[in-house]
Length: 581
Image (cartoon, rainbow, N blue to C red):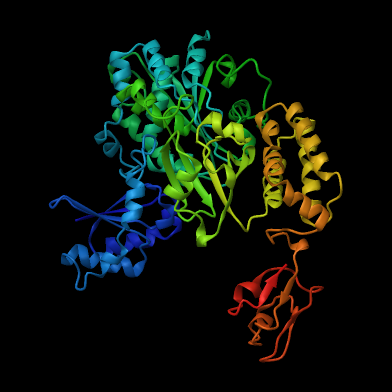
């Protein structure tokens, strides 16, 4: 028997390391894997019986469950077989099996800290194939045949960027992996590096061979310590095995990789700002042209792709670009990894073919909305994206269809919202993020986002004025037009899409001084329904503001002059006697 425990950041946060100790103390062999995508089921434990050729998956494993699983492992089933109740449900197993995993093919299936595990899956065979069988032009043509677009957000043709870098004159060229994932609710790149760092390195090697580079950099945010640890080990192991370094596979091709831990500035996801940060300068966008493929890192031709793009490359080389292009839609080929977050029942990481609908993902893969609430909207593309409403839930997931709604694909963050979400407040939240993350270089972005945020804060605070909606639209247009980089150009998108689909909520806030979702504290009022109140005194005892008064077994009252709208009373009342208006 051998035990495998999911130890991505989600698994560790859920207590995987304590569970691991229980198995080790029982004398069982334990190994590590990354996140398999079912973050909502962590900690996840798999037990392999290699002699019998069986595997059992246990989910939400706590100390009691681990003890029962130990009995099963050692005693051949356990005294009462109670470990079975922790096994993965058929529905969850089917949802996992129903995905088409290319970038995530190894995540949750191999030990990310073992280069031997990666090699057993065919690792480094793709770069070997390139070196031994393909010219650099052949490699670029294969990527062109796949029609893969960059998975960082824009979907720009990967082959075109590679060709541009290859065609640029100069002996020194760089390959840069953009792992500066900063969208709220996004964790695709982190999970990929934590679960399969060698696939990213191999993708970078193939790109380097294609463009003529001998040096690569992974720009990863410092908030991803586990990803950095595993990436460092992967690089060291690849060097020791001879996959990185000089004369790879006995050829003239040499390539080395190093890591730059970024400080976590969202703007450094923009490639020219990233390059500035790599050079030791403040991360601020530069004018284009020249493009990085012409003059990038240290003014040398540089190719920049994100983590997911590189993770797809070995698969494409081994199986052919045409095979990859069989999946997807006419304008968006292959698969896409999404991070499901927010009010989704089964949050985590999924990889689905382009062409599925939002409904397929939210209700099919994601299990619908938490607590049986109604779906209201989904935010795609992070703070640079937009909110897509319930009536457009049948929208096809590809670059063109999503753009038509006013949202964007982005890097893959998918934040789901239910009926209790205030769309005005959501717009305020995302604009507050982009305002803070603006590098300040452009006046329109630096000042314009601040002015928009001030208006939104007034509205949610009950101080909205006539003309605010028109002013928001006017400012949004000027910011989009006057900003240098994509951060400023897309910052108004959450506001514009919520105005487009939920303008009635803005009007309610401004004219009726009412938040229909009952989330904006300044616009709601808590009161007691006397007929339902039993006078149990629980709400009064727990109210931090001492705003609730009343005698035992008699209806209580709430003093709204003292009430801070914290909602504790409503959450505690067992008789549904607290109403929010």
